[in-house]
Every structure is written in C-alpha cells, then in structure tokens.
Length: 149
Length: 469
Image (cartoon, rainbow over all chains, first blue to last red; front, side, top):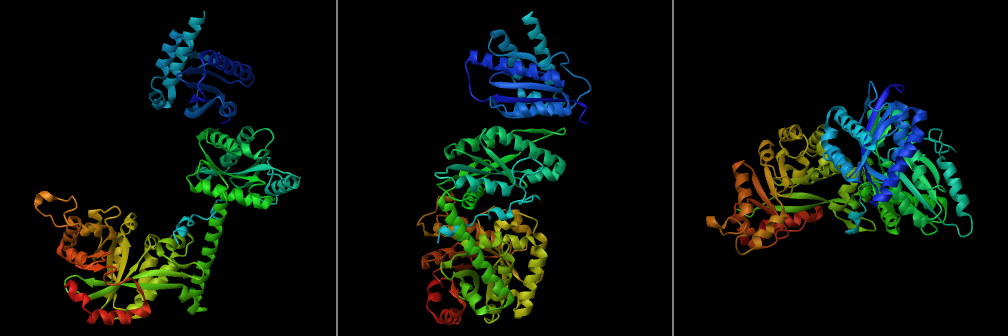
C-alpha cells in the first residue's frame, strides 16, 4: 500500500494578502524549495496560484506524498486547506516535473488562464476523483511551458 | 440563587476520554514527548526559580475518539504523532511539550503574554487536514491557558487552573482557547460541593439510613389544581424542592439539570414517584401529577416499572396518578413507553404545551389525557383587547391562542389545564375561552405535604371557589 502511487490535490488560501512582487517572490520560493526537495523522494506535481488561492497536486508513493503534504500543511503562508482528492493512481500526470508551475495571477494573460481553472473550485472538487482538476492543471502547465519558450 | 444555573456545566476532567497512558511515564513512547510526571517535575523546577514566569497551555483534541473508532487505533496513533509534530512547529522553539493523556497535550512557554497567540497557532495547525495511510481527516483542538505567577505558583495549582480554562473552552464550543479566570474556580468549587451534597442526600435516601435528614433536604411541594367550571379541587402537581443546608431552597430548574448530568435523575425520579403516590393515597379522589425527565423517558421499561412499583407500594388508584411529560422530551421514539404507561391506567399530561415543538401530529398520535398550557400564555389573558389575534372574525376576546388550544384538547378528548393563573379575572377569562382547569397562585403556591390537609379543608369550605364559579 505505502509503495503504491497516490495523488493528493488540495486548495488553500493565502494567509495574508501581499503585493504582486512579494507574491512572485513567495510563489518562487515555494516552487524552489519543492523542486529542491521533491526529486530526492520521487514526488512530482503541479502548483497554481490564483485569486488568493493555492491549488496543488502531489503524486508519488503514499508515505512520500503524506510526508510532503504534512510539511506543506505546517506552512504558515497558507490556511483553510481543503483536500480535493487523495487516491491511488496508475500513472503520474506530471512525471517530468518535480513541481510544475501552472500559473500565477500577476501577468494579465496568465491571470485569465488561472481564473478559468479556479472559477468554480466546487465543480472541480465535485468531479469524479478530481480527474478534471488534474486535467485542468495539466493544460495550464502546458500553456505555461509555451509562454515561457 | 440564579448563580446556581451557571455552575451546572459538564464536569471537568473526569468525563473526558482518556486513552491508556501511564501517568508515571517520563517519556511518551509514541510521540517522544514528555510524560505527565516529567512535565510536573519540569514545571516544579522552573517555578522554584526566583521571579519565575511561564505560560501553561493544556490542549485537548476534539473528535479524536471518533477517529479512533472509525479508522482504528493504528491510524489514531499515527495521528497523535502528527499532532505532536504540529505542536512542535506551532508552539515555538523554546516550548516544552508533553502528552499527558490519551488525547491531551501540554505546552510550556517562557512568556505568558504570548500564550494566546501560541494557542491560536496551535488550534489553527491542529485543525488542518491530515493525510495518514491513505485516509484524510480533520481534528480540532481546545486550549486552556494558565500563567505563572498570576494563576498559580506551583505546578499543581497551575495545571488545575489550565484544566479549568480548558474545560471552559470545551464548554464554550471547542476549537478555541480560554484563559483561566478566578471565577472558573469558584464555579467549579460550588458545583463540586453541590454535586457531593446531592449525592450524599440521595444516597442516604436510597439506603434508608438517616432518612429523616435526607427528607429534610429533598421534599415534594404540591400545587393545587382546580376545575374552572365547578371550582372544585381536582388534584395537585408535585414539585421537587431541595432545601440545601447552607444555600437554602434550590429551585428544580437549577438542580434537576445537575441530577441529570451526574446520573442521579433516575434515583431522584423514583423517589418523587414513590413519595407522591404515598402522599396522594391519603387524599381520596384527588389526582397527583409527577414530572418525568426526558432521561427517564429514554429508558422506557425502567420508567414503566418504577411507576408500576410506586402504584403497587402505595395502593394508589392508577387513575389518581398523572405523569407529566414536556413537549421537548417527545423528540425521540417514546410512543411505546407512553402507551405502556397508559395501560397501567395512569393519566398522561403534555407539559409546557406551546413552548417547544408543538407538533399536532405528535399530540394526536400519543395517548395524552391532558394538555398543560404553559404559563407564558396567561399574559394574553391580561390584555383588555385581543392580542393581535384574529380580529376580523369578530372574536375580540383575549387569549385566542388559548381558545384554540382548548378547542384542540376538547377535539382530542383531553382536558386542558392552564398554569400560572394569579387573578380572579384571569381565571374567569380562562374559563370563557374553554380551559377546563387551572393551577396558579390564585389558588395557592406549592405547599409542603404537611400543609395539605389544611389547604384541602379550607378550599372545600372557602369562598374563593365561589368567586370564580
């Protein structure tokens, strides 16, 4: 069981509102530490920030996902954590990314993308197994990659 | 005496779920935190220093037992380890942590002024979701705070103070922190002594030892009930009184919740039934009404047996006993019990009608023999004109609500008695709107049993009954 691949997705809210620059720095910092930490334990996933909310998918072996999730939980930079899904998966959705970045609502174009993804978090949460949520995040990650290149 | 109600709170530590944990352990093997004994030693050591100041936080998990029950102890234990980690990261680097009961933790911090902030961080962090062994769940935390030297100068004092504050936090709805206040201690002490006194009085009663002394403390008072049509005395409602040796008369609204909470209500209820039946057997043809707690009603077979025993023992005609049941106790599945009581031949009164969930279907489906209209409706009888009732029908008489309830009673074949009648005018109006009986200060306050013969005699010969006839 603990060696099976699992996927966990959650939403949370930023603890205190910050300006655009501080926000960029904060999200950059979160991504950096995730990318530094995750490869060694084989956890992959994606992160999105939009409208004051974080959305993140973590995938990997059960114990590793739980360990990372617990660390993230204790981060005071966010609050109101809601787990969207937590279940076994057959294959990873973000195999190439230790932590893919699906967007931040600072740039205008990116804002529009992110807003679409999180316009109705309840709908996403209600989707069977959160599959749509992962798909939405995956599409956003692809668009981000295009924008960057 | 109003203060008594405020001390009727659930008991502190005693009832809290305590999983198995050796209080003499130095280190809790599960979480690696200090055990209770080590915590006490640590506190004592720090408090012994000159000018010692610190903050003690006691933390109890909410919903931990439910987690253990639903997902098993193994996951429960893992959750406790996560909680310990979260405590460490929210309490600050200098904090000392201990696990002092199954789901209870303690945190000692240097600066008492930072205790509230630390408590809020702890409550926030412990309340965040957990992912353990493929399951996700949430827990909650309640925190009690005591600071030295303000709330205590030794370890035990401080722990007791924090425990009282924790108890208050749980009582105020959990998931919050409360600081110790001296009033909490006063309340707890008063409550404790009341509880002891009640136990002593009732247990003495039960074993028949020093019975006279116990009877001096608990007594039934009787309030007469009168027929509005004939003015004749029809019976009495038995009302419990507790004459506390030092506090004086404690009204039932204050001590009955306490008895319910500490599990003595059955004892008290059986005593009331037996006493009332014995007493009523001395008044031929008059009924006695005995109140029954919702908790007694929940154990139907025991209640039916207690009623049957009381009737048998006193040789009272079952028709002369009426069991009074409040609307609010009808919430559960009590139909079978009510029917069993009716089969014994006793009357059933629906008490405080109109104050709870007055469900007409319940009224119709249960075998009640009498509706007791709550005293709050009497106010309507004092109004010279209709109380904003259905004026358009031309019924300008006051108390249209009472009229409706009385009509309902008549339709269902039940008598209606109105409580709280204080004036002749109210009695006349109650009769006009169709009530059949009344109870209230107009006839008499509740009186002790030894005043009953005189009261019965006076009422039979007195002019009061003529005035309302």
